[in-house]
Structures are given as structure tokens and as C-alpha cells.
Length: 101
Image 1 (cartoon, rainbow, N blue to C red):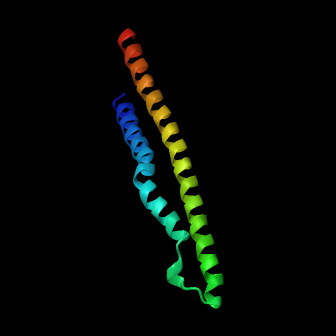
Image 2: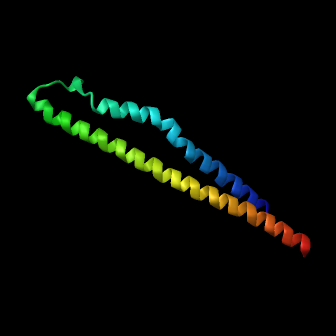
């Protein structure tokens, strides 16, 4: 039963960490997204316009992928939280069954 308690605590801690990822990446992600639309450093030469467009498109793709990752991590955190709660409940039920028996 102690193992279940340890496992539940570990999963709860991991879930909390995953939930916090979005808080840590929100500002850098917003700055990165803004920078994707401000690529003046690449200049306005005709040969660089295509590169500028490709860089902007790549940066936009990275922003979208990061948002999708955050959504996936939030889902994983929720699932881990639910499993942690189930372990806690199972631990209580096993302790009660042990007291009866």
C-alpha cells in the first residue's frame, strides 16, 4: 500500500509539472510569434523575400506545434491526475479491506 501512495504522489507531482509548462512557455511563445512577423533584419532584397517568407512560415509552424504540444501535455496531466486519484482510492480501499480481514 505504501507503494501505491508513493506512485500516486509521484504521478500527482508529474501532472502538476506538466500543467505548469504552459505558464512557462506562454510569454516566450508570444514573443516568438511576434518575431515571426517582424523579420526586417533579413532585408528587402528580392532574393531574401523568399527566404523571409519561408522563415516566417517555419516560425508559424513552430508556434502551432508548440501549442499542440501544450494541449497534449495538458491532456496527459489530466490523465495522470486521474490515475493518481485512483491509486489514492485503491490505497484506502486496500487498507480498509486489510482492517476487516
